[in-house]
Amino acid sequence: MEMPVLDTAFWMTVAAILALLMMSAFFSGSETALTAASRAKLRSRADKGDAGAEAALNVTEDSERLIGAILLGNNVVNILSASLATAMLTRVFGDSGVALATLGMTVLVLVFSEVLPKTYAITNPENAASRVARPIRLLTFVLAPIVSIVRLTVRGLLWVFGVRTDPNTIMFSVQEEIAGALAIGASEGTVQKEDRDRLLGALDLGSRTVEEIMRHRSQIEMIDADSDPDTILSSVLASPHTRLPLYKGERENVVGVIHSKDLLRAVEKVVRGEDGNLASVRDLDVLKVAMKAYFVPETTPLDEQMREFLKRRTHFALVVDEYGDLKGLLTLEDILEEIVGEITDEFDPDAPAQLNRTDSGDYLVDGTMTIRDLNRMMDWQLPDDEANTIAGLVIHEAQLIPTEGQVFSFHGFRFEVMNRKENRLTKLKIRPL
Image (tube, rainbow, N blue to C red; front, side, top):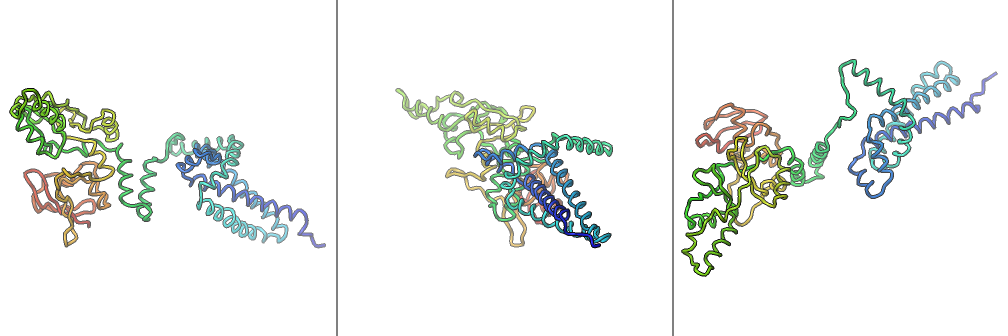
């Protein structure tokens, strides 16, 4: 007598397998959606009242618990569906049913339970994550005891092999994620280089210090407070800067900062007084007009210093080292230039270009040009950990002060010293190797 194959049990098994495959597709798509969704976009949606996005943010807080619950549910339904298919096909085809069940379920699981739902989820992860978040949250709550046992078991096994895990450790930095997204966007052409540089400049303020961007003391324009008022007035009017440090005796001894507007107001008061005339300017006490100098440590982070500038309502600071010696000068404009690029006005002198390309493809670079500026202009990756300027990088790598004509190769570039003035490298030729 021939065994009835297409009986009620057969069709019930088929229906159960289809239901399990749909559950497997749900778990696979949920895993992809919840891990690929941008938390920033979800937060934006949640702030607008999207309850699904809020649930997605909550359920992804504990990523280890989330992944554990999804994988547990996915593996259970996959194994159960494969077992049902094997039993059903073995009943129909005998021993060959095992091979047929393996082949058939592999195709079904791969296409309909893995690739299809994952592809859908990855095309619009935020929408998918908002839809699946609430049922997945319920699943993680129901499976929490089992998942906890699995987590403890896994950590115990890792501990045996010397691997220590901390569930509270943040696996990635938000800053690194944004920087990576900007790099990808720039390489694909969806983000302009100027926009990328501005955003990266703002992100980097917390990791950079005052020392890296200050104007060195050898380049500071200063005024001797012991000079006669006529000379001081002429120097202030001839300077392109509105604030100038005053020193007494030696340049290290800064006694104040003179602002051109304050000086002109004092001159006007003297000249327009009852007995005032141009000769009265010689009696002007410049130190009474000068502001108190504001000193900052060279190790101050740029974002912190910018907040201090805004808090103090000042734009000008003198930088000192750990011994209190003058190192340089910093303005709020210097910090802003790290974000938006060079800022000039009609009073700024026309500075020679720090970077020029030769006909042979080499680059002539001013030794005082910062490594960061060169990297931003050329999209290079020269290290700036040990030196701030190109000249400093060459001296650090060479471990000596090179002479004109010396050539070095490091970090994938060829450096040739073109000009040297005393102990300073003023011009270098750089060629990518």
